[in-house]
Image (tube, rainbow, N blue to C red; front, side):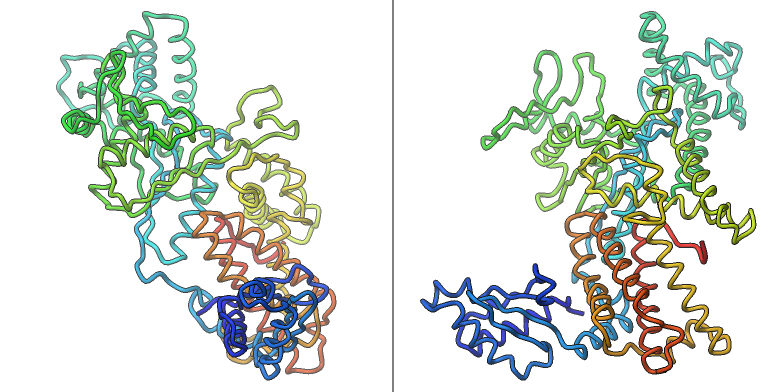
Length: 594
């Protein structure tokens, strides 16, 4: 199904061609003067120079050829040569009917679907998720859903930090605390226990303790590095202990990500590619890309067109140890060999732009990816407190993610409980649904690259550009539809759909409302192509506003003209479906009542 603006433009292009002008001049855009018209075409202005003719003359000729148009109800040529346009109510109605009867509201599916991998820039294991992990999870989840809805195969990978010195630090601290554990007995040859010798709470306390010690005690750090080496070289007891760390951590991570309605297809980490690094490094050396520089192994990635300094991409440190670069490059090797993706999308702080530029250039230069493989870094801004600085707890520490979610749930419960329209259990469940919309919409309504203020009071408000406002609009529509079904003797949704049909707009607010719905396909296409979830937020906010304006001006259920009422109910059914698809793409859902 073609986009609404494209169809209008086709009608205009035909009129330009009939008038003897280039059809490409007939591109139609949204009006920048909605008080005068709905759409506009500035092609006559652009054609004046080419055809040596006054633009108003061209505009008048084109307008004349649109007198009998079934698309436009109004075509006004306005000095110095603009074409002001309004579409017919019949054309608008037909378009919405087609949206309603077509899969995915008529969104065109790709002729050649792509395979896309989304790297969520995952957390380190054995450490609690904090607010810094929020944006990559929320943005990554929405991008994954948008790409899938647009018709592509998408694989989401958490990409855990599960290998390296942090693991050695934990193991060293465990040995200090529980030296008698059989994992540290190198003569032990039996099976290791299935139960971990620690809880997630203990594990989360161990790492910061060990990290602090290593900064003050050189001997302690040396032991941690030795334990890291033993882990990576497969010492059985150390590996068994590492598996416990992984299992306990991942169980906790899954619980926390589930609270955010975030799911991963792959739970891979740095450890999965450890054994691939030697062969990758050897090939880079053999092919003449990697060379020594001050003892380290590097690949030069600077290009002649660079206007700023791009340092070499370091592959191995001077002591032969690998780095994040090494692991990320080996992960690219693994992904290309295992999944053959057409596009790799990485979610990480925008301050890592240079890092990803180096890694991507190195991957291309050394042939780890095909020339046509897209490598994209979505660099996001920071989530700040009301003081404009990175979000902290009241005592200045980094807030744990589960505490932040709990705080928003409590605030949302307080607001919903004040209403006293539902029992405690329902109010609690509803508050969790609405709180998630507050968090996700609060983040996603901003362009990813921009910093934003995390304002609980504003995000949980039922008014303004917020998640709860969007949900309140959906719940209002559901309430109207439920009352209509009761009026008709208890019809089901499917029965209602069979008995109602969208009608032509009967007033300006209804037409404006209908015009907002038509923007869905163009918006979704842009959200996919630009990897921009904020475009969905902007669309549903405008759509919710248009509906609410229409609602306040229209007595839907008490309308005596059954044909009008039927048309409005059909319109509400379409709107509900569109809004619910959109919020699902953002990663949250709507309750039945609020």
